[in-house]
Image (cartoon, rainbow, N blue to C red):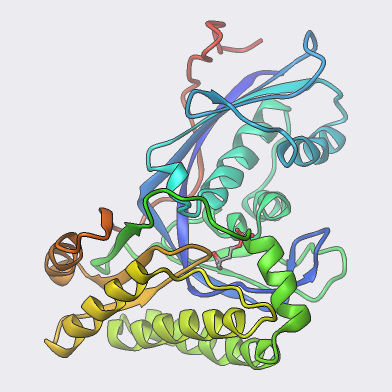
Length: 337
Ligand code: PMV
């Protein structure tokens, strides 16, 4: 049993995941497709320790709840045939409190670090499946660049895993992220919102029906390196997802006035011939898919808005991977226990 450290990048869905076919196993009602982002990284160290009587979790130097992490670690323990609790220490190099999707990078890094620390040797598909159990979108963060997460058909979820389409390193795209909302926590988690939307939104069925053709169009656009086509799908999928959420009863609305201000800017950029295609997740932030060439103009325009707290520009990032072991904050050396 050793300590293991891993790093993973967050990903932003271009064709969204919104709705589950199995809540316990985190199986999606449809597939989804994402871009892994270099600028948003989580680094996590896991150490199983027979001398402790509960899991401990430190996030960005502060003690954090293990209510979600503990049951997920149980899956790893069961698979490895061990019973020790774990020290988990995690750092995000982007603002966690902003509500930017951090669970994807978190569970992808955890999947690599926890399995290695537990002495398991899993392949990428198995790691993707395990990460999915923590957070659906984490299944995609195992992979570099463009990843597709398959809906799968099996009830046990073994075929609901992600795979890499292309790393995208030959295609100079950027994602410009405008963080808005002053760091307020999101009102309703994506998990709860999806369930509520599926149960009450008259647009949910239409949303689900929109996904397979969008996935097909996105795959073709990526194969052809066609940003305009990929951007149109990206924008359309986000709007369809939010339309279904907005039509829930009572509504789920993640957008704030600042979100719309950003969307106005993106529309003006589009009208000026700049490649800029917005997408939003379970929060108020606006992420804009653009070319490397146009990314400065997009970032500059968004930075000018008073309502924008921070702008991050990212290229495509690598898949989750093991890193040299970090020093755990309790001072104990982390090399092999
Ligand atoms: O992985 P979760 O449970 O945080 O859900 C992610 C949901 C969206 O970010 C809105 C869409 C997506 O595909 O990432």
